[in-house]
Image (tube, rainbow, N blue to C red; front, side, top):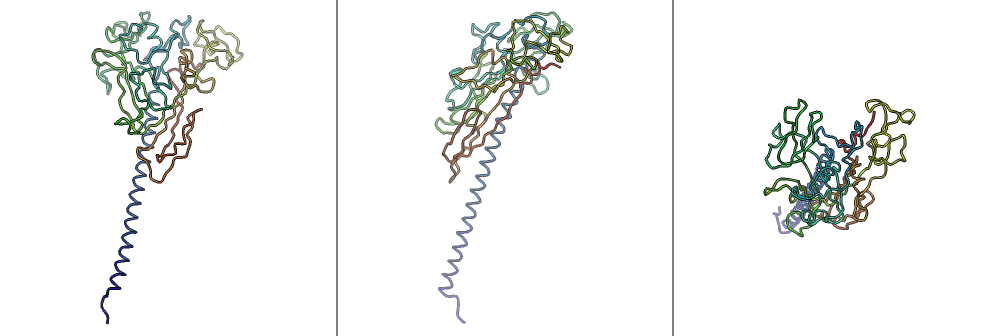
Length: 377
């Protein structure tokens, strides 16, 4: 009987090495797959979170408590006097000389704005990612300071207060002091709500300039250093590579005369919805405004660009927004090449021909606080 010889030993070593190679290969592939799955999950989570965050803000755009701008008040019997004549500068500080009545009317009447350039707020929108938009959303806080989970009332902050006392003037104030308007009993001081102005954009780096990781940024209008102004942007979500916004505009009369542009230089005229003829019945009756919108977009969605900037007349009539968010993995995937193109409305991005994975998210958001005011029974 022969013992365990050199040949048997070499064969055993060879088999062992082969098994070791197979096991190591399986382990490496498993770790790689696990890493790729983690990157993919992070990409999806970041994209969805960014979309939901901005969508939630857009849904509150134009909310001013119980106040409704005159030009959007379907019960107003006179010619509205607060039709925005200008687009607000999103980065105008509270103490600026041109922060006047006309400017405040524009802030309330133009709750959303969009740009494809950083020039609008060059001091705040820095290192903007190419082919991305700047989005501005304005509204009053949905809660009253100091109640529930709402932030405490802070002296010096900008708040919006609406009068509920019949005949009291002014109808509202937007200020940081002197809140004197009253509730329905004309004795109790009316509630006030914090003024919210959110500015979103994408920066071309996350932590260190040149790191190549795109980052969604947010700037808020806030009290800082004793002054009220749009504050330096803070980081929100890494891996957001593109942000694009398009607006649905309600700029024509409703179904009775869809070719006629809406206008605010006269009081509301009303028509019988059955015959589309003038009807003098009051606004509470089942009649349709003959010179106002109906709360739905009338044309293709509009992108505000440097080549074709949006006007105050367009933005005051925005009733919906289409939002596109392109998310990208933070790290490249070995062996992968992104040869896809991504359609963000009329714009197309890619192919990037790099090793980063991407996913495009999109949604259409109804601006409830604007569109609902225009819907007639």
